Image 1: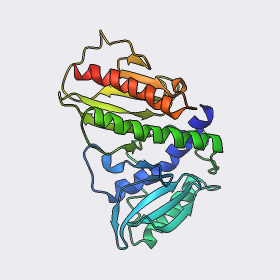
Image 2: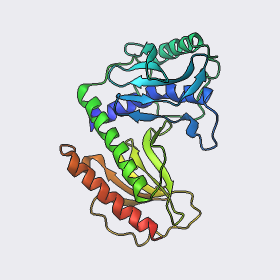
Image 3: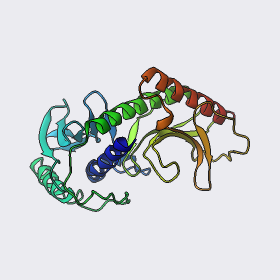
Image 4: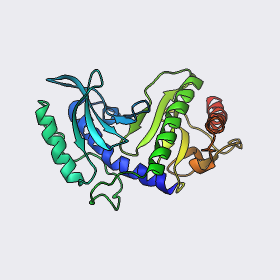
Length: 266
């Protein structure tokens, strides 16, 4: 997981430019979802949201194979490219600011500091390096797996919604209200202090219900994490059969089936 975690951190840092672009030019939403992005597994890009410009609808994306920032038009044609490799974060920001002006957009709001903090990664002040092939392939694999299983989670609760990456914690996730009014949050999170490993998670969120976790069922895959600040279940990536995609999806589906089924009974 070391190479995956390193790729996760580097992409988390770079993706903040997409969040800043979204914040500057996408209409504000109360839940901050206007700043989020998505992983497009067909083009191997992290993509932002569509914004209006003198050139029509455009979107900032990060090409994961080259680490180039690419402005896309409505037909997904590349309008402008800003490489990030061998540049510092400040140099990338300066170049993106100039590109915004070329596109006829005011870069003042883009240059403002974000309204949240991300970890101070030790490489953040160094020049950006290419991501190693193993780490990149693992990232592409697990984030596509996250997209696929988020889609399954939505089907389990009979809902339709976007599958997005939230820039603050950089998790691929969904939130849906189940038929019994329980709000289910599911997704793939970065390594953090709770598990010290990347993991799939599921929890109940903001439904107004009081969930009693004193009698949770044993899980075939994953485990419950019942703490003061967060209550839910987790399935570590290290406990998933990466070499067999069918087995990986089967274990995540079982994790979802057991946990969603329990939440729906509450």
